[in-house]
Amino acid sequence: HDALDKFGDQHGGFNLTNGRILRELENFDKIATACRAAYPAGHSLHEVVQEMFDRYELFAKHFFDVAKLMKSQRKIDSEEFDMKLLNMILAYDAAFPNESYITKLHFLVYHIPDFVEEYGALGRLSAESHESIHTMLDNIKDSVKHMTDTQKMYEHMFARINANLKPKVQNSLRKIEVKWTGKPRGKYKT
View (tube, helix red, strand yellow):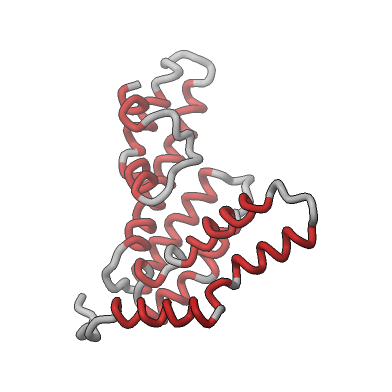
């Protein structure tokens, strides 16, 4: 119960992004201990819950190892990444034997290793920076949700999405880029 109080049961697994997921994974052993205690020895579900959380805990450990590498700003050895990823996938398959891979897990398994091998990094090169497009699209969708005219709705969405292509906006963006661009950095130090 202390573990659930510490980490907050309000998350329920759906709001575990960025630092939250790393904290939850790093401390999953405490969460698992709390869950294992739900059924005392002798209860008909005690052994089932113990066995389930043994598998979940192993998956969380390996997922944490992969997530740390993915968030790292340091150079990543592709063989180390592949091994940690393989351990995570094997633990996933053991913990969730009848579940298929979700899209992001598929992407992680089939596309990220090539990226790591080619560039030797993920943190600064990952999808995090362009994932912000989802927020922009959500804001645009929110701004048109009460429009009844479909054509006007699409015209508005198109105008908002393409606003950066207007010449005046382009000039402003170039000025901002010039101000923000500094000297080139030196060699990447590991």
